Image 1 (cartoon, rainbow, N blue to C red):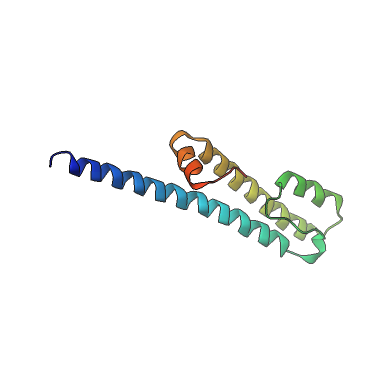
Image 2 (image 1 turned 180 degrees about the vertical axis):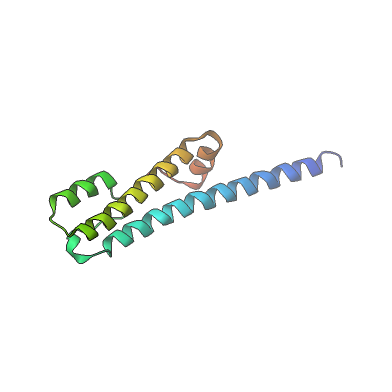
Length: 111
C-alpha cells in the first residue's frame, strides 16, 4: 500500500501537466486563426484572402505593394505584428523540452 499513492499522484500530475500544456498550445493556435480572420474581415480593400496558415512576412510584402488608406494599413500591420508575436511564442513553447513531448503526443506542429 506504500507505493500506490505515489504512483497515483505522479500519474495525476502528469495528466494535469499534459492537459495544461495542450490547452495553452490550443489557445495559441485559436488566437492565430482569430487574428487571420480579423485580418480578412478588416477591410475588403485589402484585396487578398488569407489562408489558414499564412506567413506574416509575406502578408507585409503584400500590404506594401497595395495603395491603402493609412488607417487601414496601420490596423493591418498591428494585427500582423500580433500574429508574429503569437507565432514566435507558440514555436518557442513547442521547442522547449517538456512541452515538446506534449506537442508530439497531441500532434501539434510549428506554425
